[in-house]
Amino acid sequence: MGNYKTGPLNKTDRQFIQDAFSKGMSVEDIARRINRRVTLIEKKVQKQDKSQKEEESKTGRFGKDKNQKIRDLVAQGMSTQEIAKEVNRTVQAINNFITRDSRVGLTGEEIASLERVQQSLYTNAFWRDVKEQLTDNEARYFEDIWCEMLLKQFREDLLPAEQLQLKNVIILNILMDRSMKDRRECIEDREKAKRQLNTEIRKGNDGDSDLIMSLEQQIEMLKSNLPTYTADHTKLFQQLQNAEKNLKTTRDQRLKKIDDAKTSWTGFIRSLEDEEQRRKVGTNAEMFRVAADRATEKLGEYHTYVDGQVDKPLFNAETVE
Image 1 (tube, rainbow, N blue to C red):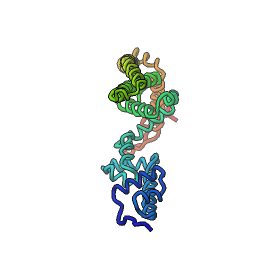
Image 2 (image 1 turned 30 degrees about the vertical axis):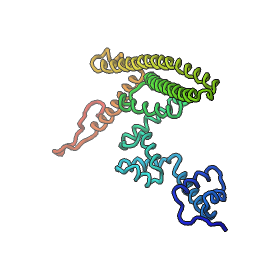
Image 3 (image 1 turned 45 degrees about the vertical axis):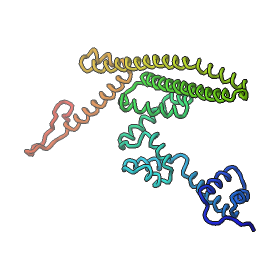
């Protein structure tokens, strides 16, 4: 029997046990290193393993019901800490959800509008291609911007051709962001290579000459790449301006036809060149016809007036039996 240390584990011992066990050290070796009983180490490791499993149970995607519960709790004014405790998740997970979720803080009517626009996007012919072309984060960004612009800027009034133009506008925005991120990574890689180079140079004769030469070449290559990123960004920006201009022109022309249709017969006829406008006019005309037929039928029936007389309000060839 050895002379083991007694008393509770201090902070240093607890941290050592955690690090050593995560690296695969056996319980016996850990106990021997810090001069503690094996049974004490086993209890600590079991407690640590249980805590880890409990924490892992709090990770993963939220279900649909939990998503809505979090939205409701946010609307009630609860803090992220309170929400995390209520739904048994980490505070970071709640913060991430609130940041990403576009429905937090919306009314029931606004959520219904958002779901309608999202469903329309998911069934659009180009959505599958967009998801294949972009990363997951970029696709989520595309969806958020699409819904926001369609709801707040265009009031869900975009024709298929205009939707394709809006898609190009958002894609170009994403490509510009991607270009700037690549430029930042290029700068960071160059600075990292510079630090490595300076470290090797300070070693003097002990420095690795091959590594120094390689780092110098890498730094020059990264430096020469920077103007390319700037040129790409400028080119994409010009394309974005043209795409936004084309979308505005197309939409303005369509809306002008609608405005002209309200002021002149010629303008109304021209507006019917648009298929969507023809559909709306046809639908409205049919609704008016049905309403008129129902009103005619009702007014052609006998009606008892206040003075007690019975007569038909509408008396003509069609209502006479």
